[in-house]
Image (cartoon, rainbow, N blue to C red; front, side, top):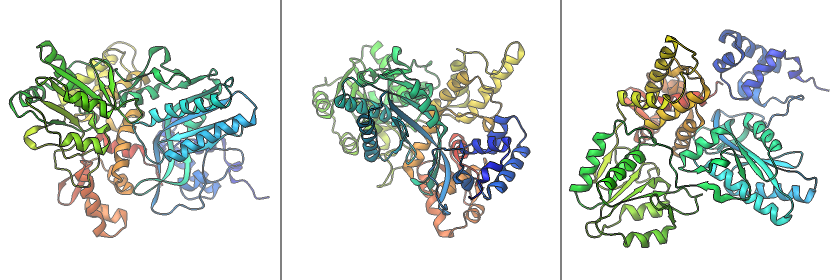
Length: 565
C-alpha cells in the first residue's frame, strides 16, 4: 500500500493546509492562527516537502485519505490556468426521508438546473445535494437564481409526493477554483468552505424552510430585492411571492450630488424632450439621484414617473415605484404611449434589459413634449461596436450626463453618517473610540475612491464585523457584495487574469516592459489586452510605458481574490 503523505503532517501543518484549501493567503493564515508571516512560510515549505509538491495548486489537489473536501482533482494544471478565489452562492437541499425514489427525484431536478445554467452540481451520499453558483462566471443575480432553484425543486418534489417536504439553506462565501486565463472554470479544481456551511445549515433547517446567511441579504440588495421581515433569514419553500421588489434600503442623506442634480434638472427642463441618459459606473449613485429628483419634483407638483427595470428572475420586467405595479414588456410599452405629455418618465437600472429592449429604448422617439430619462452603466468614451452591456451607446453628448467620482470630503461625510448608527469598531471607550473611528473612515474613504456604493458597503460591513481597518491595504475582510460587483464585471469583460494579477501586485502601477517580462509571452499580444482594459476603465495608462488600475478597489479585489502559485 502506498504511504499517505498527508499522514506525516504535524497538527499545525494540517491547520495551514486546511486554510490553504479555504483560499487563504499567507498573510490571512498568519492572522487566523496568530503567528508570524515568516512562520507561516516555514510551515508552507515544510508541508510542501512532506506532500512532495511544489505549489499551492498541487497541494490543493493532492489526495488526502483522512480528508474529503469538495475538490475535483486534476493530474496537472497548464500555464494558462490559474487558481483564484471566487465569490459563490451555495444552495444545499435535503429530504427527511429514506425513500430512494424521492432522493433520486431531488438530485435529478437539481442536476437538471445545473445543466441548464452551467452551475456545479454535487450529490451527497445521503438524501441531499448542492448547487454551487458563480464558479464559472460570477453574476449579481446568483442569489436570485439560488432562490428560484430552491422553489422550483420544492414544487417538483411536491408533485412527486405531496406529503414530503424539502428543506435547505443558502450560504455565500469564496470558492477556490481553477480558471482559464481569459475566463471560465477549467473544471479541474473547486473547493469551498461555504459548502460545509450550507450543508450544516440545511440539516438544521425546519422542514419546508430555507435558511439564509446574512451576507445573502446584501447580495439581494444589489439586485434591488428584499425579503419580508419575518422571513429575513428563513424562507418558506412554498412561497416565492415573499420576494419583494418595491423596496429600497433607507437612503442616507443626499450628500455631494447637488451639482449633478442641478445639471440634471437643467437638462430635462431646457433641452429637447429626450431620451436623455444619466451615465455612471456601478455604485456611482444614479438611483439615488433619480430618487431625490423625483422626490423634489413631486414636492414641486411636477409629474414624474420613476420606473425600475428588474432582473430576468423578477416576475416582470418593469416596476412603477409609486404604485408598486409591475408590467411585462408589451404592457409597459402600451402604458408608455398613454402617459400624459407633460409627465417625465425616468427609467432606472436599464442594464437589466435584454439587448432588444435596450436597442428599442435607445432609439425611442419621444412624442410631443414628453421627457424621458434613462440611467445606465457606462464610461465617458464612446463604446465600441462590440462593447460590453456595461457600456451601451446611448444618445448624444448633449443629452447625456456623466457622473464623476464623488469628492473625497463628500465620501468622508457619507461614511461618517453610515457609521453613526454603531459603535466604533474594535474600540471600547475614551479617546481610542475617536481614533479608531477616524482611522476606519480614512481607510474606507481612500479605498472607495469616489464610489458611494463601495463606501456604504464597507461601512456596513465594518459595523457588522466590528473589525478595525487602519489602512486600505490591511482590510482583512471584504464584503461579499463588493467582491461580487467587481468580479462579475471583470468576468463579463474576459480580461487576461494573469495580466491583471501581476498589475494588482503593484499599487502604484508597473512599467509595461516589466509586465511583458513577467508574463513571458509575445510582446505584440500585450497592447491589445491593455487597450481593452482601458476602454472599459479597468486600467489607466498615465505614461506611454506605465499602467495601473483605474480604481483602487478593483486592484484591491483582484489582489485579494488571487492566490499565490
